[in-house]
Length: 489
Image 1 (cartoon, rainbow, N blue to C red):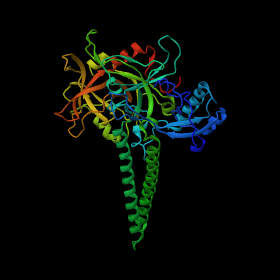
Image 2 (image 1 turned 180 degrees about the horizontal axis):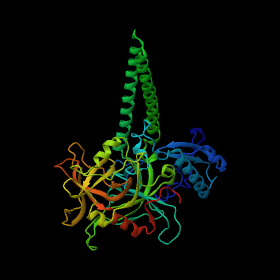
Image 3 (image 1 turned 120 degrees about the vertical axis):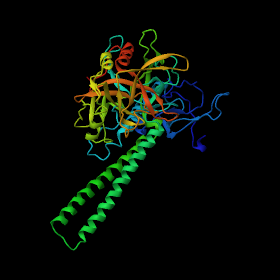
Image 4 (image 1 turned 60 degrees about the vertical axis):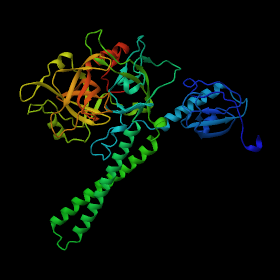
């Protein structure tokens, strides 16, 4: 054994044993699923022989997929036989797992529009519209956050939950689900592979744009400096281009740094992008018994404090830089020239401060040029980002393949022939909101849509009313607070 330079040991403990039960065989290596520092083993007086990063291949049971699966990166710690205990191994593994959380970066902060990374970093911030995915599922969108002030037994709680559609967070949408301690966790991740690659592409494109501009400014400056006539106008033009050159050079550097960080710290979906795990999912249903016939399609996940807390701001919409302040304000004008109550917030962040009531939605307060009631609404989604739509105060009726009829809020595209569709595949879960005097209220949660003959874009978007959704959430989370602005009270 010594001549081979290896040491065979028994498995005392594995950090994921609660979620992946395993027999305790003889002569198997100790596997700690985390990234660790060797110093931890020293401090804990573990008589270790090796600490190796590894990935293990698991062969599938007979009758299942013969390909098996390659597991995530783990830390493989070898110890002298009979030199430690399962309790000690458990204690050290928890410390190593804590280090793993610290080695991954928390979600990014929102930055001012003067920062060149403002728009392209949005897919990794905790503001509303955060792209979500779970194992083997299509991508969707964060609806909202809420705090659990107390658990259902009245005990104080500091947990924060995220909400999306059940069909975004769960494969089995036909039965209720609730996580219990010791059961396998269904992790929620920020960005599926498609959205993550799109984010990287957007950063790369921004780098190219600013880099191209620096080349142009450098050429312009050289040509201006070479002119024989050097008057005051020439000097002003040189200074103006020099300022532009400085700005674009800094933007290029900042964007390159962002690209490096995103590639280095966020690329591994399983290792770095977990932001919580599903706590509760209610089976998708239509409220036939209650008589509303609204669709209930929601699930809640426990937010990972290490990933979300640092930059948490509550339910805030990032209006971004996709549209200019004037352009976006103009889009909120009802079709035909009706007046708008939308006010562009100075920091481009629109806070959700309430929920439209059933009466509000039945009788919208705004009017179009023909005197018809309507609400101009917005949403920020995984696929189409910030878009504007029109709700006319009328509900839609749908009938699924099982013959079940439901009633939905029908959101139409804005009416501007140059505007993009309100939603598309991947926007499921998005919060629909309406803004009055700088304050936004919840209108509904997107769960589906009616597309145009095979297109992935919808011409009618279907929503569950917000007031109904919040009521359903509070049936399970009695003390839910949807409007807190900080992580802690």
